[in-house]
Image (cartoon, rainbow, N blue to C red; front, side, top):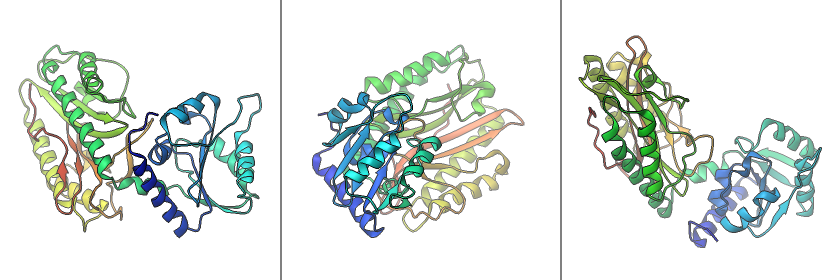
Length: 383
């Protein structure tokens, strides 16, 4: 069995979920987020692109409804003992199979929470699910229950995040010698991803972001590669990943002479990140962290060049994105607490001069100041 945590860890997670279910008076929850299933049982698959559901009852018992392709996957990677298959066939409606399973589990008329807010439950399947459950029992939205439990990391999870961060640093170290005039983005990207794999890491939940020249102002992956010029800018956003735990980092690396505008933007980005670090302490909220970022960039007259969020929680995530909730945005009331792994990114994109500057790293929150998980400093990197 390919488990990455001790059985006692999974037992503790199940017990935490049961407490939440009891407080919310839920007889069962229907989990569709792959992150929830992985966190609770170790189940590791990309089969959530199809209909699958982990049913968890208030007594802690669990049943997985999935396809035949994931039967052995669940047996090999998880602690799930009870696995029920729905069959691929013309006109198949697995929501009916799920309703029948719930009936067999004596949940008719029960109060059932559904994890709606996830890529693991499409709108189409969500509508089919609602059609089957509307008269079956009392249905409640339970989208945030497991997600909030995952926000607070155990010592074993923190160890995974620290390993992921070391792989992030290895990826940057592999890239730097290739960032020069004539350097090929394809080779840079291959070196970074290769360093993560060579260190025992995994694929990330989304693509590494790489862009030079005008594309350095983008903060999403896109197809196509470019070679660097003598005086260029290269924006990189990547993550070391270990057992699906992510530790993203972000940098804009320069080649050749540093322009006045690049230096201005870097000074502002560094000041903003340091302000964010000071705010990332218990007693403050995620909104307070964003405000520290916004105030600093406003003081540098860069408000129109910043984004409306400056980071988010990270952990064990699956496709399509390593971004987790909650995020650093204006007014977010979620309190900062110890043992969170949080990625803060300062992104400044001056479209008027086509000048980019980014700076970001992953932190572990503590009882006081957060601890950066990267071994790299915050100096401007010029090759």
